[in-house]
Amino acid sequence: MKSLKMMQRAMRGFTLIELMIVVAIIGILAAVAIPQYSNYTNRAYASSTIGELSAYKTAVGDCASSQGLTGGVSGCANGSNGVPQSQTTSNLPTGVAVTTAGVMTGTSKATVSGNTAMNFTDTPTLTTGAANMTWVMTGTICDPSRGMRPGQGDCP
Image (cartoon, rainbow, N blue to C red; front, side, top):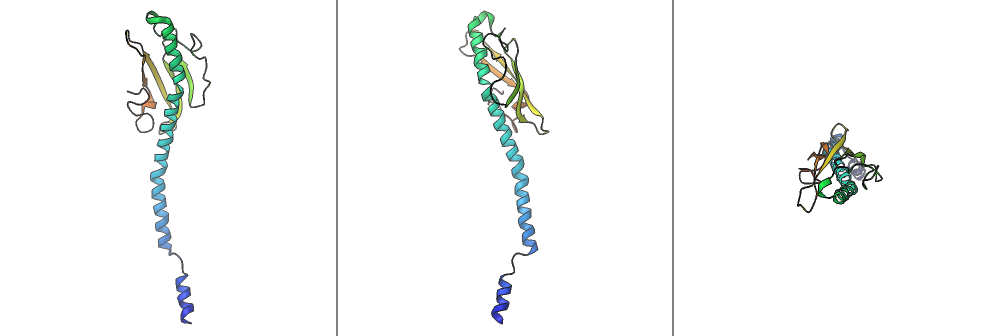
């Protein structure tokens, strides 16, 4: 009889308070992990957007090179002088437009905190006597917490 009581006591399981503590710990971990994961994916989208703009940068650089220093980047727009007419990459940068001065504008799949798409403006600078064209990116894509940090992807 005594062994039956001991078996019943050993098979009782978890108490309600123990289960509530486990659920609370999982809830706290999820509250920390979900925003961090969202920031991580947005930074990945922003980085991929900047990577996919390299084809446009190369085309604008080739256009400026073919015009020489006198023409600079004027006339280096979508569909002219070798700059692609429309986007043929993935859906990460959307609505990429290249103005006549070689300035690229558009939006990214990355979002700011209110699920609004991040925008960008990437401006080329061609300095006389310099070996390379420099680019400066502005816009919400240069957000250190959800997008590119300073010094990454042309962000100042």
